[in-house]
Image (cartoon, rainbow, N blue to C red; front, side, top):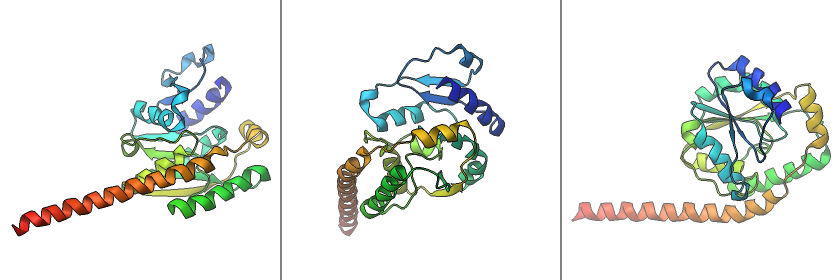
Length: 229
């Protein structure tokens, strides 16, 4: 973790002058080499809460206008920040995805399967959110509540942003060369629990949307009834 931060922080500093970096970590960090970065903040949330609430703890701690997320195994994508920043002026969220096909088949296959299931269940077409750089307007995500315990939290986050009327876009990114890329290619894995959670939460999200629609119709009918009187 310390080596990763020492490489990522200078790259971010070249793209953005005023920034803070929030690291959500499940173990203490005592590396003295990080003492020279006053804009680095460490969070140690209760891991048992699940991925969604932990992710939201990072957003709630964020003080800047935009929030840039680098999921696990995606640190090399920090170089995409320069390409994504111009787009956040128009959109509420920007997602990058790698066009490189050198990832092993046992990783690409479940991603393809999950994307098809995601399109069918929530009508949301997007590339692999679980391992993609993501840039958000902080104000758009601070008020959300996430429940998913796995990395499905990224899907839940985008689903709820769309329901709020927010706009998003994707950008294709070449896989950069470097130590992060080599490490990622050999150690990358897929979180299979997202399949179960997608089926579980999809019904829950649809039920909430249906209830909200019915409530809005009831309120509209009540308002029209008052005017008729």
